[in-house]
Length: 316
Image (cartoon, rainbow, N blue to C red; front, top):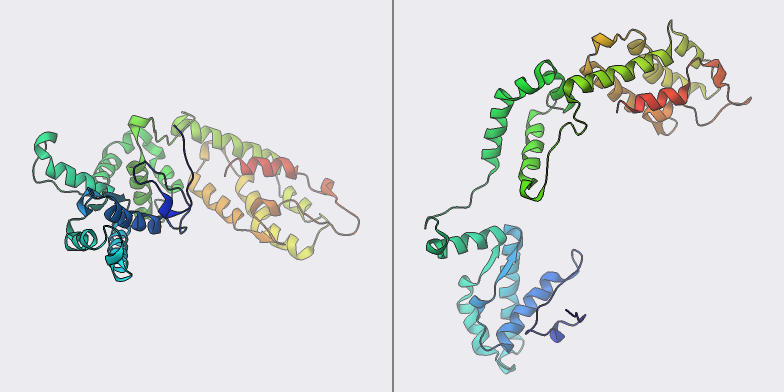
């Protein structure tokens, strides 16, 4: 199959298939409205009701209808009477414009099902409805019946991680929109736990990382005391100590593997990520970017800051 590029609407061959490829706002609708008028003027056998135009949204379909009608009216006003095939076809198109098949994709499908209900073995009276209420009802049923059985004691923590406690409506909206975009027949899958470890396995992995962080921080406040000796900007150091080092030390120095409480850990990590210092944010603030006179003295801090930062990042 060969293709011929055309950059002039009037040079497009109306007897061949065509592909209009362009970015938003570059003239696709303009091209379509002009092609419709050309078809009416130049193709004797083509009537307005023979030209199918489909688009994605109701707004886009309404805009297409308005612009195509306006283009026909403008063509007549600007001399359509003198153009070949002009006046009769264009006036007839305006008279029958209410029957012009300009639809959304779903609207066109509904029209086909209604007009050919017998052939499609469906009811003559059909209605296009949103599947969102159905998805919401099924989701709520799963949340009541299935989730407690699947996630057990970890359900509350998992809902907390997902943000359900902050905004249940937003959580429901996200899950429903995901369900609406899935196409199982195309192989799409929604996998909450891609590693297959389940809630218990995930909790063990998180607890293991927390124990590694606890070992790096060490006991007895040594981490914060040593960090305070590092030679970098005093104001920045005060901010990092108060908002990052001290909270991390307080949480992890007393951490016990069997006492993992994910909501508390999530609150801590959210607070850490909100830390701002010297134009940096989150865990990037942990390792100074600039040092005072005398250079870096990382040996004053008992914790390996690079290793600590890496393990903390594994929790995000």
